[in-house]
Length: 439
Image 1 (cartoon, rainbow, N blue to C red):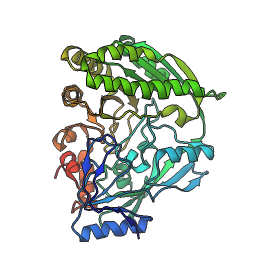
Image 2: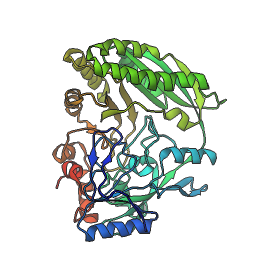
Image 3: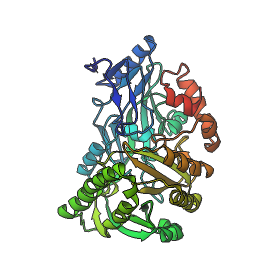
């Protein structure tokens, strides 16, 4: 049988430290059959069920006082189909392990987010994404998935099999069942050349459409209290491979981006008045650099400084206005924001509740250092995002409810109808899903 947690009522906490829960029991099934049995047993005991990954969501999407399913024994690659160019992987596999395993096989995902600590099912269920002109979120690369539904049965779905479930369950928010395996499209391993360089805020905004159009993957960070940004362009390359040197990599990615940045955050938290000066120094600390490497080494970077985050997707055409409003709000507010604002894009996709569902999107992410008050900043930012029909990232802090969300998602009712069919008794319900999907 599955391994039970040693402390029956031990507290579960997320990575950001802003969400905790005390499940009645925690289980780690070693097979799909065991997981299905745990789901049936929970239903018999009158307990709700939630599956949790590595806790990288800042919302309480995985919190429960019922049965918490931990996926650490459901990991690894089930199979690679080189003819179809797909890989099928157990739901609890961390993206980090998937990326490394694929690279050993000469394969890669087309696009990914900027961290790879999450499990594949946690990342896709919440709509995790990177940035891309043509290539979309991790969930948009799914070709098939396996789901344990509320009655304990195992459902497989793809474009051909149970297509209406497939349309929704790729970003299923944990509301339709427990994902047990995912089949991703893969491609032969390729090289990306990254070009990182500072650029004035006004220039990035003025030239954004051009920068977006000219690069396969474009993103930038704006440092509040300054007119400075750091831009990053990733494009496919014929090589040769020229990774960041070990010393330069340690200096930029560990010492500056994690070590010095951590100290700057501590100083800013203790003495908020120093934040604008620190921001001006930090925004100039990172110099331009170019390097060429395999995709996951370019797309992802270590994030050791803990924070809380809010991110909204706005229509791509609304990006410039939204950012200008955000900047003028920070400038006149008296807020002290020590974390850069991250901006990325995604093309429209066909996933029911994907943040890019049916519209070309731009993502704006605001962060605050863990332990500093973030409510005033996030509330003011959210007011701006929602005025542009923003859609909140499902795994990041927001205050939206079903009434708002049904207005910005044309296919919202399609998702809730499917949920009524697959989970009529609301076995997978929790407070967060009650708020965002309605009772």
